[in-house]
Image (tube, rainbow, N blue to C red):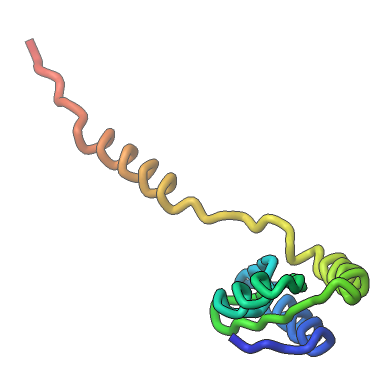
Length: 124
């Protein structure tokens, strides 16, 4: 996982969406984080200091994972840029047609069994 600054993260996210336009997916997760260990958090809380929480954003396309951390002062700029990127790649967000292999193979099996298992009629 690569921790990038905000602008390089947005540029890399744009390229991920471009690469996955025809085939593939991009997963973006957002999580509250202080980027400090539990021990550091305990020391700060016992000293009476407040912990500044940030938003940890991760993006992956199953081959590459990138991440960034956004503070309170940058969150409006990030939201606007992220919304612009999503709007620009809205066509890639359309649901693609699924290949129903299971249904087609079941239909073929039914057709083949119905033609081969027909009973011959007896003459009286």
